[in-house]
Image (cartoon, rainbow, N blue to C red; front, side, top):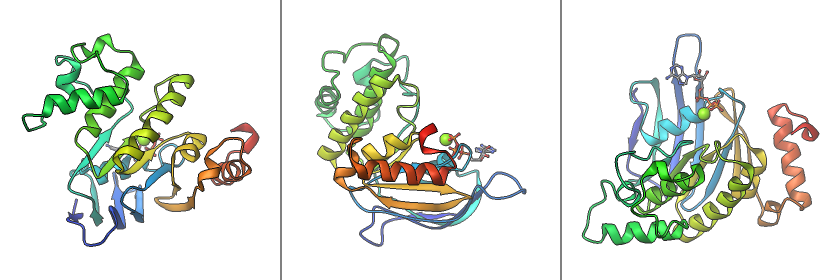
Length: 245
Ligand SMILES: Nc1ncnc2c1ncn2[C@@H]1O[C@H](COP(=O)(O)OP(=O)(O)OP(=O)(O)O)[C@@H](O)[C@H]1O
Ligand SMILES: [Mg+2]
């Protein structure tokens, strides 16, 4: 990989230019992608399965150093990543997972506060296996946010959760992001989730940004005409009939 990643040169939190990534000689997964994310901006990334959403997220996280490609990537110094599974260390208690690698005498206090923020006060000494899937994802969010990242990358963080827990997690994530104001790139399969959560929705197709739409505050409500309009537009771009979505 020959990507040029380094310090920010502008006010953007994320700046990607002409990003290419490929896994074989047949063709690229990312084919000259450009993307800017402003500080504190919440961007949802959607696209058909296999279009390169996780590839882009991994490139931004610096987790693809053995993948062929080139392009320019600028991200902040402090980046946190949340995946579909919580990736908690099974041999560490919840608080120790949350503060793992964190420096400073106040690390444990910050960890406790982060756990309280995600509704897990009192579970500090539990083992990961003693938490439900939704609780494990909340612990993973606490682990990310305790680091006060300038950029939060999340790849289908609610993908394995039931519908009701997902809705609760949406409210929690929105609240946490409003309190901590990281720039966010959230990968999701779910168009409704994208519109409800994000300031902007981008749709990846053929290795570039195909659609880039801003979500007005009022459109986040499922009963709003703006929500329905955006939903129809995005499902159409995904090649899905809105009534089937
Ligand atoms: N490590 C890898 N080795 C080979 N091919 C890969 C690798 N990772 C991803 N790919 C390929 O790159 C393409 C994009 O994969 P990616 O995981 O980025 O898609 P995605 O948009 O995240 O899909 P999904 O919505 O299913 O998670 C796919 O065709 C996939 O098979
Ligand atoms: Mg993926």
